[in-house]
Amino acid sequence: DTGVSQNPRHKITKRGQNVTFRCDPISEHNRLYWYRQTLGQGPEFLTYFQNEAQLEKSRLLSDRFSAERPKGSFSTLEIQRTEQGDSAMYLCASSSGIMDYGYTFGSGTRLTVV
Amino acid sequence: DQQVKQNSPSLSVQEGRISILNCDYTNSMFDYFLWYKKYPAEGPTFLISISSIKDKNEDGRFTVFLNKSAKHLSLHIVPSQPGDSAVYFCAASVETSGSRLTFGEGTQLTVNP
Image 1 (cartoon, chains in turn purple, blue):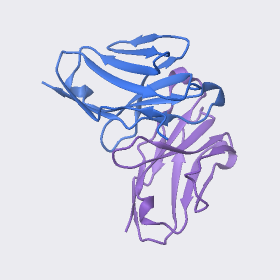
Image 2: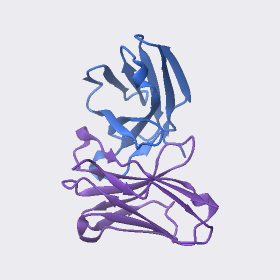
Image 3: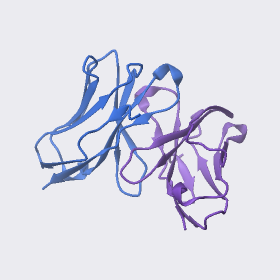
Image 4: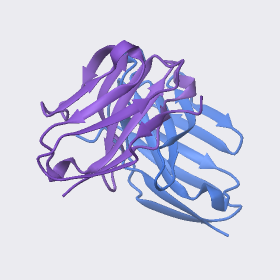
């Protein structure tokens, strides 16, 4: 297990198209998080899963965004009808819940909406 | 509402000297604090954390100090090395919630040889 894996690394899409990103967390971690980062800002929380249950969603997560974590393993984040303002780095992180070890982030998916 | 703030967008230090990165927070419910380092085109990497019941935590060249009354924390790196050049984020959490980390805006550290 080499850490948190995110695919694709880069995605360019036309405005109005739907996109889906995948995150494979560290296998022993039961908690999975999605964040979004724009230039010059820190990551912003989007949503959080414990096992397969989605326990919290940010108000940033409009109804065009949906996330799933079937069977508590990998997760997908889908954005429908993309807008130029959706252009950002989408980061996935996983955690065992022990704060001393922090959260492990993936390398992210860079989305560009043209 | 920016609950975690890093007021210095950038910091430049000489190799071998101390780097001090600062972070302020406003939410008194935060009880766990973390520092992350981020290189371009990579995700943030966990560095060090501190619980609100402590005022100092040390790991090798990295030490985090927490001043709860001032709602302020700082990361000290000594001695600084060129490989430490990166963006540093502080983050805070309400541990019992087990959920979100709230991040600051980041500070770009440059360590000059």
